[in-house]
Length: 200
Image (cartoon, rainbow, N blue to C red; front, side, top):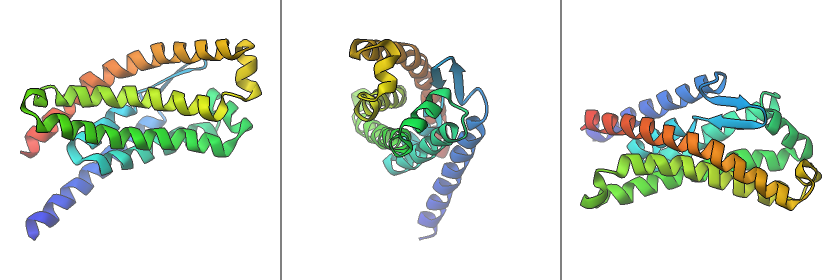
């Protein structure tokens, strides 16, 4: 009984620490690096770490924190892109910032569990799951963006037509996705592996 309580306490403390790190990153360039309309975020790193060392539920909770910080940026005008979306539809913007990040954290935890259970993929499970966090974040976010805002005048006028919108999405995927994927795979994988070894 005491061991179970102690384990839960450790998990709660680790979750609180990771959430605090994300809140600190929210208002620094390390959390959201803005270059024009392009926004590169390193927030998937703590989400990946939480999902790997604490499980899918913790990953989803970390996704909530990630999404909330993203919505705060849009709400306070700290993100030009997010602010533009807020003027179009605040509710859709909230859905866009929250749902993809929650799914990303949850799915990352599931992916790690599946990979870690198999001996042949156990060694790469940390890096692969961390990589999946960044890729899922980009793919789910862009998919939701097109679904919710693809038919709005803002996107139609950005390049004049749907082809221009798809080109914009592709540019974001290549620039944001590549940088975020490499950073999350290396840093998230290394931190997760070290923390799990320390706990064991």
